[in-house]
Length: 542
Image (cartoon, rainbow, N blue to C red; front, side, top):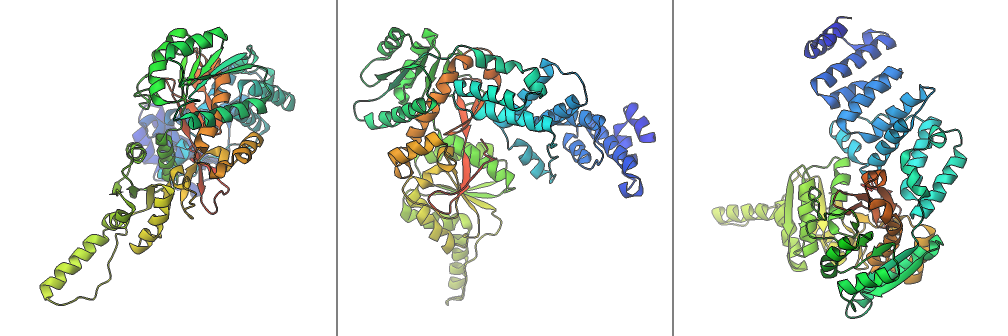
């Protein structure tokens, strides 16, 4: 075929021009598939990777050559799920398999779990329907393995889940030749944890909430280890480090308060004991900066920035573009606004207010209704008589982001109705659910523990009435801190676990960044009642 000859000689652009003159319906299925594959190869040669993917979506008969080409395209697009699917399909074509291949497949699946919405966002923007994962037993086994490795909870529970998976899939290639990452599951378990929280003083209630969540997770896992709890409000940083040494702690968890974390971190880094800080160090929100020079410091928290990033991914998946952001003057709202703006590739129109009384005017200004009223006033003044007039609002917005509390969200609903914006979908953070208010119809980020609770999480929710508790995030942070603490030794050294760590946790899907910061994406749900069924935004964006 002339197109193939042109490709072989490096004239990919001429090959594309030649093939554009043919209609696939003119040929047999096999010939059409050949044209689509050649089109994909030409686009790949020219760097048009998304167009190469588009061409491959039209191939009907799937062969080993198809999977090989798709793997090349998806590697260029950084489509980890698609790349893993291709590797699994190619592996099935071979009678042999190696640990290197298995490592590549599992690492691709783990990386896909870290950012599950990425492929959907890119393909939605290009108006391409994703290529579905094949429903083979090999693919199903790999996905089941990835699920248990990222959602089983503590390292000890994950080790048990891994053995259960091998019994369920005894003939799967990953069971016969386990990936390297599973070796760490056989390492000796953590024996002693030092938990350091403010248990006295003005913020004792905050520390107790985290403590109770931590202990609830500890009790539910039924793990044999010693837990030592220290009051970080009653001791200096050096005293806390000495206390951890005295009890031979394998892992330190805490402190919790920002000021304590900043002063404690240098001592913890020098101690070389794996430490899970329950707040973030300065500049650790910058994913390009390594906030800590050592591997033994991990940082876990419930930053509002993670919720804003989750919303940005989810809204892009829904193909929104022009967005109005309604936000108050609080520090958390401004942090969320900055994060959303950074993550959002389309226009943003702010509507800022200081008090609820200013909310309606802020919305009216952003919707253009205020300008419409000003035009009426000018015309009326020019004519020197009243003018019959119906204010008009802008029609170019796709959605609204509400960085508001529960009370403010309740006031926002009539404000949107008054300014002709109640037809727009509204997205918000969990802050809109924390005043015992439920902004019906809002799509919100929420803690997975409140959306799809496990047995242990249900018990904690019931025991402490967390659906109505303003400290719910702290209780759930405690649950998550215990799980992550059991992983701390494996994450405090250069390893496959550190490079590819991702975990479905009670506070969201966690991903370990280069500086030791555990970022998270949350569940996304549309509010119907105080709690409703949800899906993970994208997901979740977890």
